[in-house]
Amino acid sequence: MEKGKITISIVVFFISMMLVSLIFIQFRTVEESNAIGIESMREDELRQEILNWKTKYNEIDEKIKSNNEKIEEYAKTIQNNQQSSELIDKELNEYNMLVGKTDVTGDGIIMKLSDNPELSYTSSNLVYLINELKYSGAEAISINGQRVVNTTDIVGINSNQYILVNGERIVSPYEIKAIGNKDNFEKIINFPNEGFYPYYKSKGYTIEMNYQSNIKINGYNKEITLKYLSDKKED
Image (cartoon, rainbow, N blue to C red; front, side, top):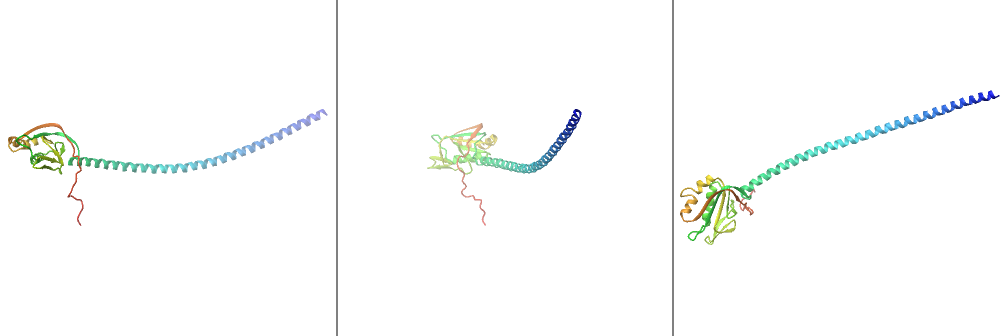
């Protein structure tokens, strides 16, 4: 009897173990199936995500290329504008120098004309000297600080009781500065008997003449107005 119970117990134990094993195998299979499904689902999602990022990357890459092209275009435009601006500035500076709007410094001559009890300088005397300086190749001229330009008037008022230069009254002594070649000045201004210096000196006028370096002549400080010139073309 006891032996039969033991046998039955052993059989029941083995049957129970088999059932447990089958249940475990089933759970394992289900778990692996779910894991495979999840992994498969994750792989699809990852592929879609990668595809999305690739699309975004391509879009961004195109934008970057477009922006780089615009930057290059802007850089060329800025460079061209800068070159144009530099050229315009250069031309403007040259123009200002030509018309006397710029302060200049250079070697040249300084002449001092002073009235004396016997003789006084007139506007015509000054015009004569300015013409000789121009003929000598003077690049810049001033009278008592007034820059002489193409539109400058040198006129005597009330029988030369006083003189106007650029509309400003000047009085003796008259300091005339000119920047240019010393040898040319010497040939023209100091030409024996006929040059301005020896001629007026021999007449009894008070006059001094010196060649100097680093002479500064201020720019013309008024507006240059052209009254009769026009760029309009007649039909």
